[in-house]
Amino acid sequence: MIAVKPRQQRLRPLEPAVVAFGSNLGDREATVKAALDDLAATPGVRLDAVSPFIETAAVRLDGVDEDAPRYLNGVALISTALDPHGLLAELHRIEDAHGRVRVERWGDRTLDLDLIAMGGRQVHDDELQLPHPRVSEREFVLAPWLEVDPDAELPELGRVDALLARLRASDATPAGGAS
Image (tube, rainbow, N blue to C red; front, side, top):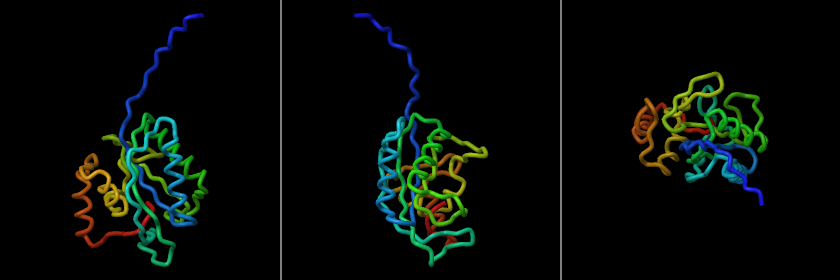
């Protein structure tokens, strides 16, 4: 037998991340569940918690669209060894596998996966913004997030429970899904 010296490897520590999901076309629940299974099966990703699903009206650039199909929304907490751009690429791969077509900004979709936050990271480039730039305006992200992490906080924005309370008090809340 030949002794093989193991190659030294640098493993990245797992970092917490928050992924919001939504769907308003087709079999929404089946699509979301399949996408969450795909996320859990992604190398370098561990699915830690999934919020209860909530149903919300669609939001367009000009406000809530009560005539559009309703969204099924929620939040997944994960731990990942991927860097933020690598995780975003995996989220796009999963969206594409479930028929996501990018035609209209804030349009109807089979699946929407948004990287909301990743540890305390702040990223601002052409591909990615962390934390998500509109998270403090999205009850359909904040409320389910609190269901799975009551102590959640966002860099520079503060506690998620306080953000949600301010949003609900403002009365200018877009209640619908997708971001």
